Length: 328
Image 1 (cartoon, rainbow, N blue to C red):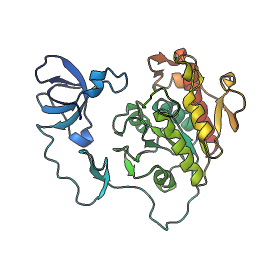
Image 2: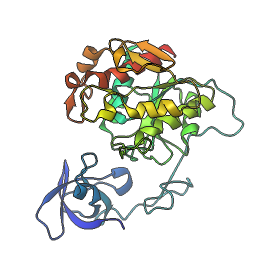
Image 3: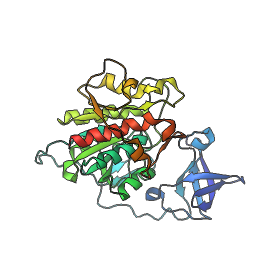
Image 4: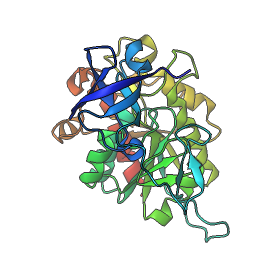
């Protein structure tokens, strides 16, 4: 069963609540596109599971419904495609998939990212190298609400992303797609010159070979290849992660490369070649401007580590963004 509790909103910016029968202020998050705004004094029902488990990612209560002002929505009379279908959060959306029989358009190059922290450096590097209009397709594997990511909002505001599509189970982007491949196929019709696709923040992970959100990159690669396009994988690298499986070229990236059913270009940041094991194919050397990105004002921390504490982590997506731009 869902671990739901009644609570009262005691702060709106940032959102904080107090559970009924408690005096403890707890961090919370509300998807305003789904449950509406929350104001001090509102009575809400929250899902407390993540915070009670002490999760580092997603460690906050999530508003399930606002009992004070969240029961007045009229719904839609036009759209009939449901996201989060057959759950209590199902809602209708309009989708961007191209109509059957529409004219064929040449595929755009697609960069697959296996974690959300690669989006900002990849988009920044692609824009800096003249990639044109680059859009982001959010997949499953991490946070599903499109409104949760501050990175996406910042990149859109700064013109570093041309749009944001939430595909498959994710929802709440500027546009919606029922399927990942449908979203990739629609990229040209959206006016995009290239795509970066991968999960939202807070990917799932179990320490197993394939049981992690980074496997969403495999689906992205196969969608690009099936449509006749070029697929790149942003390499997950690290010199500062304490977990051996993520040091050097992460097992996330190696698993995707091992299972890919077609050619995948793997950008290699210049100066970090020694982190890549021998025998890899389709390596593409590319520059990674770490100093420029560090001064860009975009996020430069990952899991508590600064760019200077883990330069390879940021070099990977910076090289990937550079390589993506060369294909546009």
